[in-house]
Length: 269
Image (cartoon, rainbow, N blue to C red; front, side, top):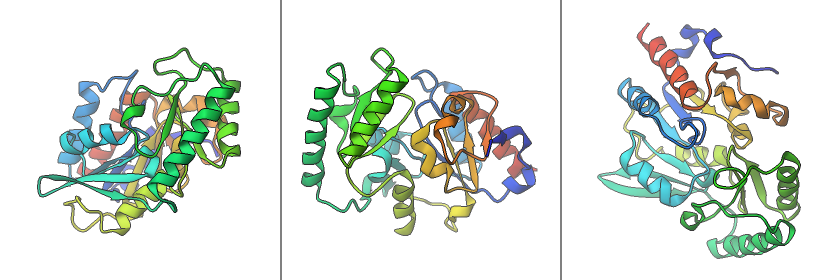
């Protein structure tokens, strides 16, 4: 079903929302930068009383920083592998059950990386690969010339054939072994009592909104009653079986601001 315009969302219905889950790259950020206006929107959501939980494909090293310095309650990283949060001034973590040991998962990733390089000699790992624990990120346009769509599709097929989960973001193809994704990572954190979250009572699943921009957000679009895509998601709609309920008029960080403005306004009406 084609998404409706975010401007058409009924403010009375939005009043039930108590938490915002968000992708980061090209949802919160714009062309690789976090603008002051988008960062301010994060703060305004937090100050308005919403729980704020980024859910990202970015690595553990980055998520450590986000959990410590951003106005967030927790952050789900590496496409659901773990959740970082602050408690009593200390950064803590909660790992999502993966169905295998860390060593087993890393060994399978190493074997997969060798097969990827054999098939795609031009492949380059993402610049943040050194800071990843569970995930292999192949750069398809962030710091390299953009890959063609058919090349991206062939890379995804290779990963799937080897038994890996593989998801396309706006900048990377992320591949991993382990029975988790963005949805399962968030579910696990919530099932453990949402540690790090001060908001009481704890928001229920049906009181959360998710906003994203790319195919790796599809498990979230499919799982939330309140799901929003920023306008740049339009280029991927033909890849999605489960698109978001709404689309913003603006792209990337400006679209995130558009979402935050309406959500905050709905609470104050």
